[in-house]
Image 1 (cartoon, helix red, strand yellow):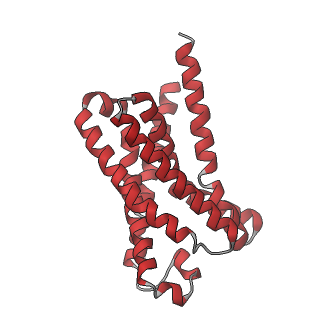
Image 2 (tube, rainbow, N blue to C red; image 1 turned 90 degrees about the vertical axis):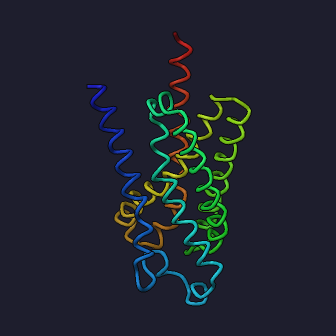
Amino acid sequence: MKKFISILLWVLFGGLSIAISFHPLNYLLAEKPILVLRFKSAELLARNFYMICFYLHIIFGGIALLIGWVQFSKKLQRKYTQLHRWIGKCYILCVLISGIPGLYIAFYASYGLSPKLGFGAMAVLWLTFTTLGYTTIRRGNVEAHKKMMTYSYAATFAAVTFRLWLPLLIMVFGKFSTAYQIVPWLSWVPNLIIVYFVMERQKRMTHSF
């Protein structure tokens, strides 16, 4: 039963990551502003720098989401080490290309200060965890590398949890504007908390043997 649940969670984890990773196509194929862009001013949408940053953020963030989840495969880590390293390098590059513009566009988030701070804090932590993941493995600290990259992907996975929480919050509060005050935080803070407690539990189990 435990093995079945593990497989089910793995399939759900991978399936959601893959499905949401293609979400940027909605923006690329649209003929007019859709989704979050609908709430931006015409003046902002006319700024080439903002739009370039927006598309860099969603496209490379989507790629990071698509390739990052497979890095948690024990088989990939042990049997296909070179592939694991290559995917890891691509993932880090994608996070940097997505995260830096993401920090910039966070300042233009709609509906006030809370979304700006929420998205901005996430971008900073995302870049920080990913950078630490790279520097720790360069120093040969495998355990610290695993820890930082797990936190990094928890932030990447916010793209998924954002889209799970937003409709629920709209149902609860009845207003998109209210939901959008909360979801920039709810999309990533619980992810990091869950990762922390899972890793602490694994540490205690390891030390108990």
